[in-house]
Image 1 (cartoon, rainbow, N blue to C red):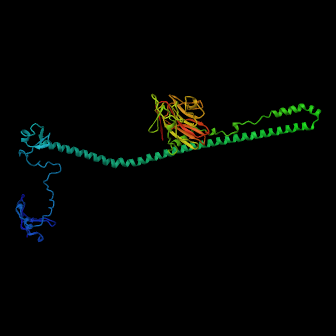
Image 2: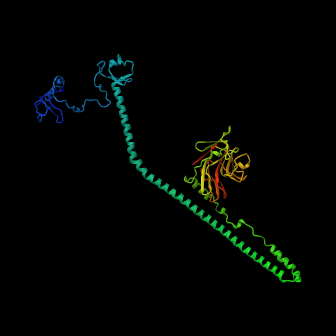
Image 3: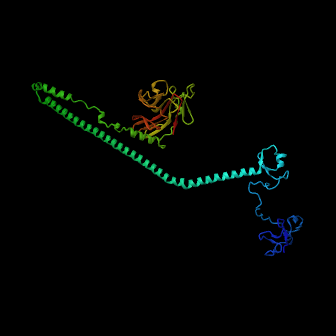
Length: 468
């Protein structure tokens, strides 16, 4: 059997104590509920010893002691953050810790306060410091309580109220989208109907003109044939006297024949494509094309054509050199006087669009040109908009215009656009300059190009930049 041992404490009563997976303890005179025969005698002997005597026990060849089981938490241990010596005396002087040092934030004894290291520090009684901490804890608890109440109120009232509000706002947004699309659809349908009626009316007008002309010239041909037959009969059937007597009648028939003129080509007999010109349709179409990333071209500027007055930098930025021209290798494709530049892309059919950031420049030209445009010299044959090979939209300070073959159409704008979109419909024969920011058609020009065209640019102030 194990021997009883004593544990120092308030009662000093001897207790049984067995460690391990079958721990048990009891007072002196009580037997453990089992006989720990599996423990070696020397190890059993250690169970009865006072901890102070364990150092003198010779364990001999006893097996190594297993790791001790963690002791249960001592209710006398300080709480987290609690000063472990708050209930003890001063380690330096042994006095009661009845004061608090505000500089070192620790409890001190009267000796520390009057003659120790804290004599020059600001101090206060421990009770006062504890009262401050209690008040602080109370304040913090009140704040936490108010914060918790606020969260609970938010969970109970605010969030549930947002659900129908969000649903109502979403429903209103859907209705707005549907209403606007219905309105746009109705406007487009009305415009479609109007334009189709215009097309039908123009077609009927042209066809009616053709029919009228056909009837007129058919009658004219019949008259001419009748006069010719009459004159042939006079020539073959009349003798000299009768022919002389019929001279006046012959003159009348001849004058009648001369009054019938030769047929002339007339635009009135052709269908006029201008009947489908619609600001609404052009604006919607240009907006749709320029907002569609799959349609807009990603142009590359042709460095072989760049004027020495221009500098091409990263990001397709074309800058005007005001002070000193740049030295480029000369070639037949390079402009040597006007600040012009061609794109490497050329177009012969289909729909093409590109956008240019022009907000930094007050002097530029944008448009298209034939590859046959002259490159050398200061004459108009190499100046954009002053020859039959180029079509450009230009700005000079506050003056906006469209230029082609030295003909300039003024464009009235309240402010300069930040971006200019160029929309080229080669199959439809239309060139449109568009402001994507305000969805305004700056200028529209109808033309059938006879050869492939290249995007062309000119800068005479600051810089412009191609954008995707």
